[in-house]
Image 1: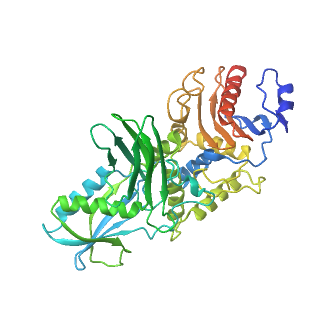
Image 2: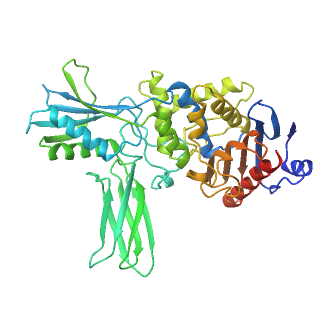
Length: 445
């Protein structure tokens, strides 16, 4: 075992190991997955910004607390005396328009044709916090930073299709959001230069603004977060109910009453937890990570469930794994927050515990991107055999991390964690260097 505090020392100690610029801050752990023996450690107990490798912590917590087969149940209940339909947010991520359409059909079948109802959405089981601590407001209009809500459509991203074919510019969107506020300031121009921003988050009347130029006789596709997912969910449900012959008089928020007279008209079932975790890890979907974290809080009895309570649960788990590591911090479940700080040895312990479980180790491993095959590793380490490395990546403006399981050329399984803090934002260079280090381990162990 070699435990050292600087990568320059490591480069001298291990012949052929790729070296790291001295201006970068580096943490690394290599652990034998079978025995837990530390092979190499560089600043292993130092605290680093983990970026999206935090999702490994969220994955382990979800599998331990909820299990791989956990399914969200988003219910619609009818108050037949009050003429109200309640859609109760369960926190389910990635429910689709098709889920809503089927739920409306089932609900319409349970009601009198032509009857009139108010539709209310209830998200009171969750804290009203659409964005997490440490999320920059400047990121809120970016695809990786959608709002986090107890009722969601997909991952709260709207697809915009902009066409300049013909005499007028046309803009289409999916899902068909009834309340989408879209301000088109685009012009036809010689080149494509489209900018988007959102105004009015603080006033709860956000507007998605499109600016810039689009070439003539072309079309392009954009993906952007939208605001107010619970209201949009209820609005889409109302549209489908009206198509099915049910009149909707009003759409508004409201808490489900404690009444024995309520009738359940439909239940929307999510994919099982291990499928959601796979989508979360392979494509680094931040919204899924945050709702999973809050769901752990919910199932532990917190009312309302919150990010803070989920982070507390994750912190307790990390302390159980490595009591000697103190001072670390979790502010969210996705890694987007710059307030997070973890040690490389903690991520190594999470991977060792997760992949080594006889109960759900296979599911944990299956959630991870595969080198040269899929997810955020689809174009990385293509020189290695497909499946030689499965792991989670993480990137912030000055942070580049990776953590996963390597099956070396000799068949040895190694837990690898590499964390770089890179002044100047050299993240592409850092990724290439991480890949070279992982390839070095594959060849030499």
